[in-house]
Amino acid sequence: MDKKTVSRDGTSLAYQRTGQGPAVILVSGAMSTGATVAPLAGPLSRRFDVIVHDRRGRGESGDTAPYAVEREVEDLAALIDAAGGEASLYGISSGGALVLRAAASGLPVRRVAVYEVPYAVDEADLQRRREYTERLTRALAEDRRGDAVELFLRETGLAEEMIRGARQSPMWSDMETIAPTLAYDDACMGDSGVPRDLLASVTVPVLSVAGGASPEWMRQAARAVAEAAPNGTYRTLEDQTHMVDPNVLAPVLAEFFAR
Image (cartoon, rainbow, N blue to C red; front, side):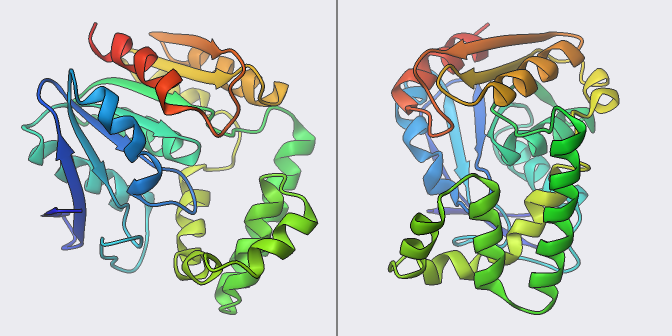
């Protein structure tokens, strides 16, 4: 990241900016930095001024306690100011939940696109999410960062043998470093059900995308987002999973943001 801006509470935010045209800000999900969404910046920068940033508590950005979702909305406000006062937003997974909250807050946002925000679609899933929140909160309060990362990886459906392998990998220490931000993403998700009242207040166009090879519940959640937003559209990308190919997603986002 080669640029810095400062959020309302004094937190330093690191970001990169490429391309020319209308501004688009890309927002990563849990356990990730701006590097996760950076592959989208290349193809989008042919038509847009693309901003990729490290969310607070990650990478080269700072952090300021206590955390609140409103602080991350203010972070996006600072980035929008840096972009010239208006931008479209894209968020993947829990980053999608954040950009939807930002749009609902009244920031100068033109359009919002999200990919597979993992909202619960039934009561059993909601209960499991509540249990995850309780266990995550306890692990982080006791500074058991490795356990917190394991909880998250299980929540994503990663097999136990893969989790054991991850613990032995060189990346594990980096994952433990940003483990406290798992609570940030959990807060952005709210109670994890589809926030229909919040979405009803998002008046700008919303594109909700899911992968055709992802679990059915993810497509259900993505459809529900589009249905709850007054100006929402749903799109399926055939053969894609939660690890979406940026070269498949980028043309869809470009067409939507260019309207």
